[in-house]
Image (cartoon, rainbow, N blue to C red; front, side, top):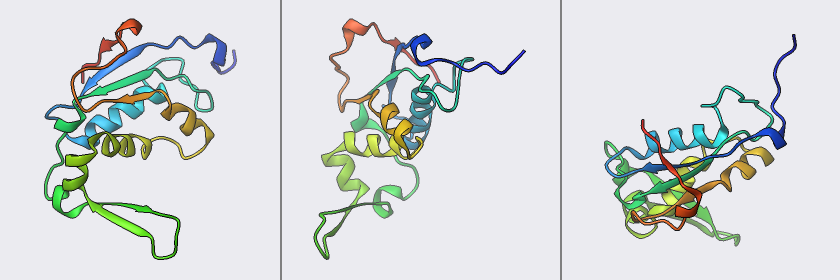
Length: 142
């Protein structure tokens, strides 16, 4: 008997909703990354995308514990010399909460082509409304 290896055509994908309201950003992101990766399934195969789709709602109500709101910084570069920009997470969560959640989840995925393909199955919304009702998503309980 050999080791089971899932084939991409055999993977059944489901849709899950994660509510980020009142939950720590890192805890929500790690659970979303686990579902996106497919680690919650018995057919998990490291080199195959066996994960499900994840919808994160209420991203604007996610919390950062401790002094992270004031001390944690988001860095990005314009591409020009001296173009390093830095934004405090307090401002980032106020202006672009979706970006903060997406960045947290993508940082927990593999940094290769599999991780980039997996990240495309992540949908993040600032409010409680989402346009994916036709996919019949299930609520994910922690």
